[in-house]
Amino acid sequence: MRRLGLACAAVAVAIGSSGCSDLRAQLEGAEVVEPSVDASYAALPAVLETAEWSVTDGLVSVIVRNDTDRDLRTAEVTMTARDENGEVLGTYGTSSMGGDSSCCTVQSLAPGEEFGLYFAVGEGSDRIDDVELTYSRLAWAQKPSGSPSADAGDGAEVSDGAEVNARATDFVIQQDQTVVRATVEVGEEDIPRALVQAILRGRSGKLIAVVTGRWSCFEADSTRRIRMELFQPVPLGTGVDSVSIRPISDAVAPRCS
Image (cartoon, helix red, strand yellow):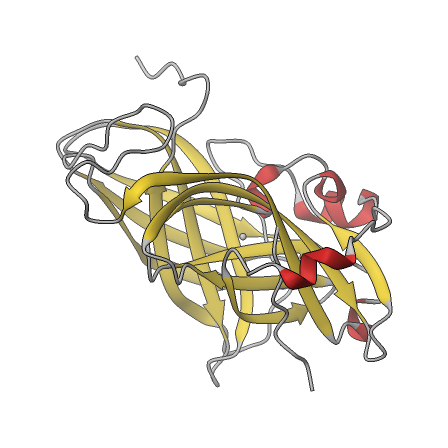
C-alpha cells in the first residue's frame, strides 16, 4: 500500500497564453537528479501536509495542504520517490521538468487550502511506493492569516479588491490529450499574473491529474475563457473536481497595456 510521504524542506502542464512547455517533451527529455538527502530532515516538522498522491502514466501528482495559521506566499518543492524497500528511485523538481517552475512551486496558499504539484518520472514510476517532499526558498506572511497587519512578506500590501474566481466550463477527453476550459471572473482590480489549477479525479474520487499554468493580464471587471491542455492520457470517467486561481507577484510585472 502506498504511504503518504511527510517531509521538511501542479500531472500536467497547461498550454495557454503564458506559453508553458509541452509535457510530452518534458517526459522525453527530463533529467533525473540524483538525490542528496540529509537524514536530519526527518527530524524537522513538515512545511505542508501531504494529503494524497497518485501515479498516472509516468507522472506523479501530489496534493499538499497548509495546516498552519499563516499564508504561505511561495515555496519550491522537490520530490524524492522511493520503492517498497525504501530505496531511492530518483529526485525530481524544477530542473527535471525542464526549468518549468509551475510543476513544483507552491503559490499563495492560505491556511486550510490545498495545492497540486506534478513531477515527470517516466519509466519506473510503477515502482513508486512512497514520496517525500522537501521545501526551499520559503516565503511566509509575517502575521497569522486574518491579522489586520498581515502582509505578503516582501513589502507588498494585501489588497482586498484583487478578487478573481474560476470555474470549469468544458472538459474533453481525447486520445492523446485532455482539454479543460475554464471561465475566469475578475473583480475590481487588474490581475497582472495568476496561476490557474484544475484537479482531475476519477469516478471513485481518486486523484488523477493536476493541470497548472500561469496566465497574464486579467483586466478588472472582466470575464475571460482560458484553455488548459494536458498532453497525457487519463482514464475514462475522469472529470474536473475543482478549478482554482491565485494572483501571484513576479519580480518583473508583465506589460498588459
